[in-house]
Image 1 (cartoon, rainbow over the protein chains, first blue to last red):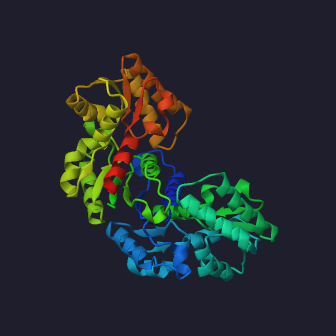
Image 2 (cartoon, chains in turn red, yellow):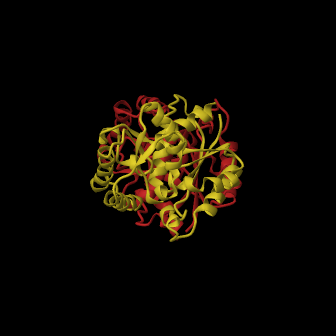
Image 3 (cartoon, rainbow over the protein chains, first blue to last red):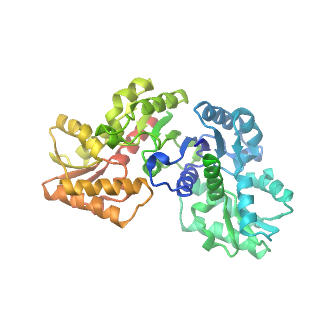
Length: 229
Length: 229
């Protein structure tokens, strides 16, 4: 069984959610048979949204150092428990020296399996992730069109996101995410990607009017499949 | 701010609980100000109970290797997210080369603060932890007497513990732990230490007739105090 390295802490609650989903995706009756995760839960990684706006330092160097550290600590493969941070995948992969599983590809694969006919895909993601085109590029390769919330909805999404990162996880944040899900569905989305790790902390499939794909869960399942291969 | 290394995976749910409590004990409004944890969540560590019975390999060498790896990865201090594993504290400390915070001392300090007059202390712990005397030695130094569940209650405790480690966390397991808490209180315990990281997954202060000290929470608070010192 392979050892999984996790670039985490962006934020901590999202990393805990990813870890919980890895173990939920691979229930084993004996503790010693469960998968090993080495997790660098490092909230000091510079803000991905600010960096993409050109208003803060790049998280690339710190992510690359974390990747190298995890590989040195024994990780056979790496995952990044943050959608936006995938904008620095090339730097991370170059430093890692081991394969890096993509959360973006995992989410797209899960969506294609759950909603085979969907072509108009709603996207709930942080502004930096949107600006970097992380998901839009992956969608385009599959012939999918990204449907985004309106400017006001996206601004409220970002406010909620930062409140969650600060520890406030409640009804107001859920309402902001839910409003965006309803907006993109109203604009014709046939399925939605929860493409920010804070979204599934609050929004489940029952909270969206069309199928909602949890990128965190998709990566957890892909991680287990790889670890057990 | 110091980097905390966590020897975890014993079991994974308990490690997730510890991590969540660390972040809950140190809410910070800005993600980048939160504490960094490097976590080796390694469920392959040999069974502590079997080892103490002389029926399985010692977890000492693997724990020592994990400690050395975490220090090499940049941890300034280590914590062990498993009470029973503290029986191998000397091996761990020798390999670490950095300080190791004790969950046992943290729990005793928390108990002394919460119940200053208590001398008869109920102890809910795994059989290996009991057999190794991990808590009993710490209690004796403070003039405290350990009150243990009866043999039948302890056997049911262990059955529940292994079910939880396999992923079953429900009413039957809670009932087994609660019965032990009631037994030791009935035998005169003035306060109880939840001295097994699986216990606070199911048993809160409201579930015990006398003050219940969560060793996981006590270690989380001590960890934050040290990281911020």
